[in-house]
Length: 271
Figure 1 (tube, rainbow, N blue to C red):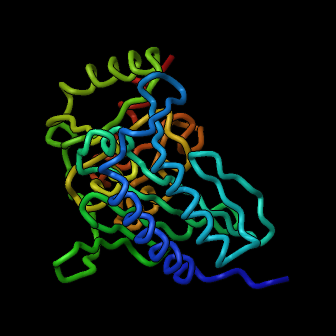
Figure 2 (cartoon, rainbow, N blue to C red):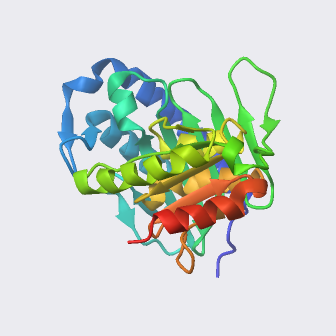
């Protein structure tokens, strides 16, 4: 049996691939509106750049490691035989990309035997890069600045003084339910933020720019890399009691507020 690769080598491949993909995305911004289709609803958009970016990422990853599996937002999927699977979101934050709001990311995670061991999130608009390997910490690199900088998250200790980020789905009924949760949560926290990219929200929590982030209805490609960055920065990762993370809720929070926030979100997400 072939030995499984170490997480550092997987991260190195993911970073190189993300940087190349980020350049493709940046070059494609000027023509982003030329070829736009919809997916789950009229506001759930996909551009030709999303598709081209996923094609590039999958080609680079499987070109280097042809026996690996892959799962991509825009349809790339294969099982693989190596024990490694790549989880890819070519542009997380496509609506931001379409509107030229500078928060859209290439997200690549590597699973080994079902556990995420390496992840990279690259803000294609700014060049800011977030990376993590399991057990090795989380880091941020910013163009023009010394780095990388180790991330340690927030030290928030009181939920009522905490800045909480979230996001919303694309279906009307889903948004209605998520809006009701926000309405109930808002009086219990400092404030709410919504940046439009789950991967970057998770990394913002890792960087201490918000104290917590939660969202329901995410897919694996939305959170695989970012959740590893957040947990390696020392945040608590959770979901609804007795259910896997992402079914249907993903929560990351500073340790000092995690228990209270998780309990409150569980209450607010009861049917």
